[in-house]
Each structure stands twice: as structure tokens, then as C-alpha cells.
Image 1: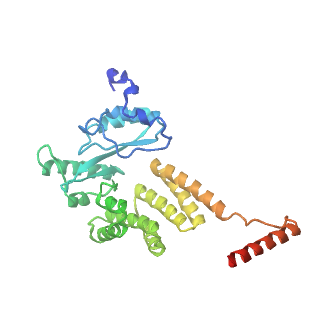
Image 2: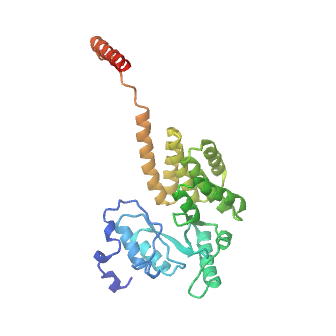
Image 3: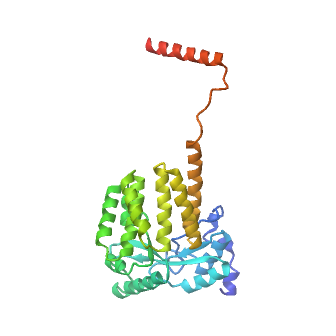
Length: 305
């Protein structure tokens, strides 16, 4: 970072309204000023501000490129923040997806997709078709937010349509990794809709699957949350604890912090469920007799009303 940029006051940072942000939160969808009209800060500033806010990691997802990636990684190393490299890829369907590199293979595929987007799209207007993304999806995490097809269906409450789309993907996707990601989506949909048999079937399949650290971390998180929804609190706490340990070991802090919040909620709910019924052993017999008599009088009054 140049001396001129170092002298720039962070009082003018575009992040200034996040002063109350709790430590542990990790931004996974962020663009810098290399994405014109979409970002307003230098990549170095993102790393510095993430460190100030106590974020253990942060992602840079510029539009159709890794333009500030090297500068971002260098400043993250100085600031003690784990850099997550990704991109916002424009699709020919007039939509976009955010992808994050999970490992070296993911980074290589991300670079390939960006190159393909600029080579096959119009000049100054890069774009990809979904089949190109699926052909180079290994090692990449796709954020399916409300702007995606699946996310839009789920956000509108159209879980059946979202489920059908993911089932189709598990059958037709050319890459095994994409099929596993669709199965994770199906696991979460099953838990949200109370489909316990389907939830258990997807969980059994994913337990045996040789999936990567990022996807396994999210699987364990969704597994714990689903078990909690079905009232299986002991198993939920075990899965969430495993999610915390596994994601922390692999430095996937976005999952570990969310799993910590979830396991605390599970323990609180489990304690409420296991609370003993109130005992009336200490109440004098004459008070119990009077309460019973009043109850009978109330019943008689209601029946004659």
C-alpha cells in the first residue's frame, strides 16, 4: 500500500456504518473499486477494515475478474486476516453468481472461468452460460442467494420447485462435486419442510461422500440445524460441535461462528424441554383442596352458562 493510501482517513471508509458489527462475522460477497459502479474502496482497505472489525476472514468478489486479488492477499497477510478469493460471474441469462475458491483447484477453475467469460462474451461484456460453469465447478463454492434461480424459488416459498431443480441437478450435473452441493441444498430444504425421512437419507449420503472442507463444514452446520428442528437435540448438539471443530480446523470461520450460535440455542432449548414439571409436594393439603373446589365450581358455572 502506498504512503498516500495509508494516509487516507478510514473515517471516509464505505464500511463506517458497520461499527456495531459483532466480531466473527465474515463478508463473503464484497466488490472493490475495480468493479465500476459496484464498489467504492481499494482492495487493501477491505483487508484493513476487516481486521479492525475483528473479522477472521473476508472475501473479495469483484465482477468478472481478480483485478485486485494480489494486492488484497498481500494486505490480508499484513493485517492477519484470511483472504478468500472469488468473483461475481456474469451469466448470459442476464443474472450473476458469486463463486469462492475453496482450494488450489478452485482457484485454477475460477481463473479458467474468468478467461472463458472474456473470450466468449462480447468485448467489454464478459459472460458465461451455465454449462461452462458446471464444467469447471470443482473446488468452487457457489453462493445461491435470492438473485439465483434456486434462491429466488426458496425466497418466494416455492420449496417444491427449488427441490425439483436440485433433484434434476443431482441427476444431470457432469461434475460429482456439483451433485453433492445440490444434495446439501436438498438436505436443508427437507429440514425446513419437516421431511424427516428425506432429511435422514440425504444426511446418510453426505456422511459417506468424500466432499471437500468447505462443503463438509456447511453440511455439518445444516445437519445440526435440521436435527434441532426435528427435536433431536442431543444429535444436533453433537453435529454442531463437530461443525465448530471441523470448520475451525480448516479456517472456515463463517461456519464456525454460526455453528457456535446454533449450538448455544440448541442447549437452551434442550434445557427448557428437559425442565422438570412443577411439583406440588410442598403445597399444604388444605390449599390444594380449596383450589380443586374452585376449579369444580368454575366448571359448573361454565356448563350452566
